[in-house]
Image (tube, rainbow, N blue to C red; front, side, top):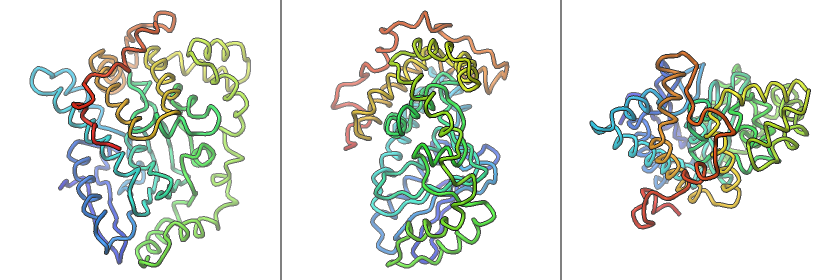
Length: 366
């Protein structure tokens, strides 16, 4: 097990606590393996009736995968780094699949930063999930900012957000709050941080006959009148018409052209933000989300596993992490450098399978 993943059982509820606060609970391969092992053991344990995933940090639920590791392993492929990257993404996506199909109620307490890989361990399947946000929630799939794409099942859950919200969030990489998350169907209920200790006690006392999701919904109901809990008052709701208009296009070039023709504050800001993202990975992301809308979660994860292999082959993510995290110069040298240089063939390359079906690392996902 990992010192960065703690587990305990209270009555019949299993609690998994991410315990890597200094790194904002960024997921390492060791942590992925520890979480997987706990969930597999609890899946068939009749004494465990529900699982709660939480954090020990007031700042973050989980900030994503360990991108410093991605950079170090990516540039050290000659010494085994590439193999570690392969293991990480294969096992992380298998964990995402396990959570999505978990047979017991699965509660994600998304207090603080929840991005990238953090979304992968929060977005359980609709039959099991209860996703809680707070006033500290800062949610995003910001991968296009580091030369990657919204993985960990982003093809699935972003493509199923209402209207064009998923395309907007994936292609722009923008951060949203609690009410936005509920509006985009990426969260279920709002609970203020001051009430979390009471909620934890309530969950700790759950009995086998207790419907934990109903309990959480009833508990959260007392806060429904707060602005953070009202999806109709969210920023996404206020800009929904513009989002659906501009992001309905099936090319990023047309999206940016549409935004450029809109003088509103939202369009101007979004256009400026997208100008900083990887041109290639924005195009790949849009194609990914459009394809994911017609696929089930297992096939989405298999597609993403191919995409991440292609991404490290290309090297865009290595450059993106260098600029954002390593050198911190915030001037990535994207390849290609502009949207007009991205060709359909470049985008299609990311979806070309890297293995025969029988050898795919996630071939057993169904």
